[in-house]
Image (spheres, rainbow over the protein chains, first blue to last red):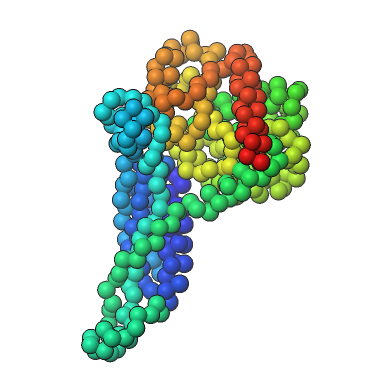
Length: 135
Length: 231
């Protein structure tokens, strides 16, 4: 079970991102998880909760998008989904193919961050004319 | 006032640090001209016996060394040292797999001169799940499957078979005793990883070992000519 160390890396990444943004609160992390990444969704979700405890990320959500496995079929010359990870073949023509083009992902793609509006104390009209800043 | 959270695009590989370390190792191995072979399998599939035999045989004609990962004890390093090859144990504590940084640290501590080595073996912690996510910078990853484990292991652990390059069926001296169905095992390996080379051998009787050594030598030669073509 290596999900806990992976969850801790995700929390670390989020803390870095938050620090870069004046310690803005992070509500959620969006992760793409390939079915052949070697990481189990349920184990990662419960590990994430543990990894967040007593950190600024406590109470945040990990939103996992599972990525199905796709291979390149040399006969159809196309990207196709495999029938199952126990049967790595083209669903159209049955040609076995080891060329995986998708399904090993383990990547954070986005975070929901509480970003204070610039000049938040001003009225709506004055804010719309204010220049955008990253602070 | 509470601001609404915004969705900020990030795009970061969670295992980026390991991938960076693995790439550094691969460059180091290529520059030194050492061919690196790692072994993964479930506990008890015969990794250490197989490696001991391999080191003993290779040691007579090439310069070899091995790193061996375990949660605890130095027992495997002691067994492997009988081959006369230099061996270094990596005890991982509670960590169920090896990571590239552990290889870097172990190599620094072992103080071997890599350019004098022809082969370096890395025995991973016995585990068919966790090692699959971690690149160690190796040239060749072997996944071992013993005849006593059953023919359907590849179907149960497709991810590790997809992270490996070669499947090695071990303990074939016991095949008859446990009614091992070799055809089914090969079929299952090909189902999860089409085209995967499969070797069968017995560390006890030595059957299949000469073919395995030849396989290693030819891959090492291939890697060498590829490296010099790119140089």
